[in-house]
Amino acid sequence: MDTNMRWSLDDLYEGFNEKFKSDMASYKKDIDEIKAYAKSSLNQRDFAEGFVKRLTALAKYRILTDYCQLTLSTDTKNTEALGYLDVLNDISSELAGPEAIFAEYIKNTENINALIEESAFLKDHEFYINEIKSASKHMLSENEELIIAKMRNTGSSYWLKLYDQLMGGLSCEINIDGEEKSLSLSEIRNMAYDENREKRKSAYNSEIKACEKIALPVSACLNAIKGESITVSKLKGYENVLHMTLEDSRMEKDTLSAMLSAMEESMEGFQKYFAKKAALLGLKDSLQYYDLFAPVGKSSLSLSYPAAMEFIIEKFSAFSKDLGEFARKAYESKWIDAKPRKGKVGGAFCADLHPIKQCRIMTNFQEDSFDAVLTLAHELGHGYHGSCLNEELPLNTEYSMPIAETASTFCETLICFEALKTAEPADKLIILENYISGCAQVIVDIYSRFTFEDALMKRREEGSLSVKELNNLMKNSIKKAYGKALNEDSIHSYMWLIKPHYYDSGYNYYNFPYAYGHLFSLGLYNKYLEEGPKFADTYKKLLAATGKNSLRDVGLLCGIDVNKKEFWQNSLNTLLGYIEDFSKL
Image 1 (cartoon, rainbow, N blue to C red):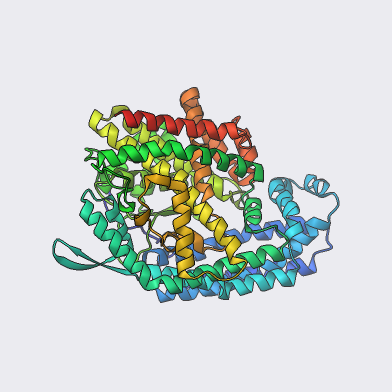
Image 2: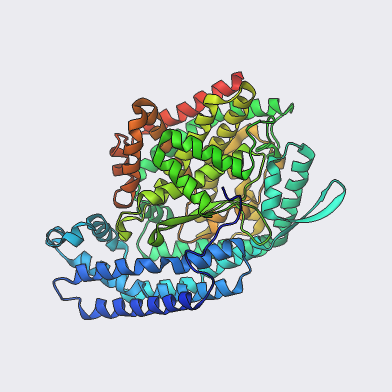
């Protein structure tokens, strides 16, 4: 196998060459054509079919923006990519006008179902059209939608770019073994997993100092982006940004309420895990913030990147041949960029490239960390989800954010428990601790992030927040979630700056989807344990249906009602059971 830890983007474009420029020109031409069609053919009987066909044809141009964004994710200062992304955003914004015309047409068509039944093509897009019908009550006029789209290009989109540049160019000064070094933020954050406590503490202090250097401009980014979201939600007639997010997520308010209520009740149970971890680390009191990800021992399952991929492929294949083959293809085809380096953004993500039936995965893989293996499995899960949608029509592949975290978390859970089956006793402690640590992040920490963002939205309606106010808001949210498990004086009050999810106006409240995905996937995993190998086929069909169903309907496909608090409690009780097992080791 190729052990190269950098991806190849050549299947998209081999640089910003003539092919890229030609496709960009064609994209603009096709946008102009659909704009003209929307105005000239509105009164024709087959208008809806013609519009949806033209909209479907535009999907192939997604890779233009994907190429720019993927290039920037590993080279944040690439001015050529930044320039073309600006142009593409401007071209794409022109679609807001014809989409508003189409939405108005769907809204005013009395019997939309009869129109759908007349066309096999529209029947294939029934969910998409009915979703537009439902959302049309929040649609503004053609000119207003166009203005908002245009203003975003010089508003939230630019603030997001500034944030990415500030974070990508941030240097953290640290002394390691008597040597002064300047490291990237992702390199510093990876030290949170180091076994040496003084090194973790030093990295934490370095990170805080680095955050202080850019806190003011980043706070401006956050205030501007959230301010825009609040303004847009009000203009469109939503109660608030959360209401807008829930509708965009195809999620009922009862679902979120049931899940959050169950999560709140589970916080005390997680205290037992944090207390056990503190004891394993030899701490007399509560954990310091820089102890949260500390390893509790040395596992023989600490793997290099190539070994981690082989491990994942083997365990995926134990669930289904299809999943294992996907992971091998992603590795051998250089779809993964694994190594942290300067100029590369932190964290991890997967970009689905539906037009070419591929994906690209970025991680900041740290060797000798089983958590890094789980992160890799998580992103491969995203990629597999995309592959299950490869045969779906382009407009039927857009799934909502909460369900987006299902396949990823399922794969993470799968790796963890497949590893436990054959692990030595000493390794079982490490694997279980890693798994519970991840659960704590998507339950306890995500609860703190949701609490912070919800409070931020309410406060932002009254005016901009200072760095000090943001820090206090973040600190209080973390205290509420972690309780006495975390030393209050060590709380990382700049987590609002570190988490990139706060800075994309298209994904407000991108925190509860992680909790949803984790707990929903755990429910799916329990069904796998009940049904055995035959579940793999059910699972694949469920993922293929995620682009054309509400969250509740996706759950009902396999007998799960996500509006019932009992479902979320059952998933959380499973996690708390693992904590009990861990506490006894």
